[in-house]
Length: 101
Image (cartoon, rainbow, N blue to C red; front, side):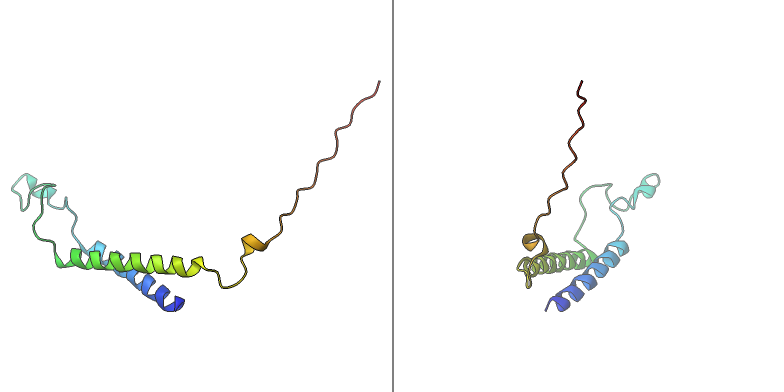
């Protein structure tokens, strides 16, 4: 089960990167500002594109797989290394030498 969720998590991560890189930035039209504008500069945008909707779905799936992996890992199957290891005391430093007159 953990392996399947991990595979879905990694594939979702790769697809998010691809979807974000394929989108044009919000300030991509700033070069057109001198001659004319295709959209308002840093203003309201129209309806969201297909890629932005895909990004939202992938981000939601990424969050769900992240939370499920953390919840699965929260209940350890075997003994915990941190909880069951004995604390070792540090070696004590030798006592300082004092001069007797």
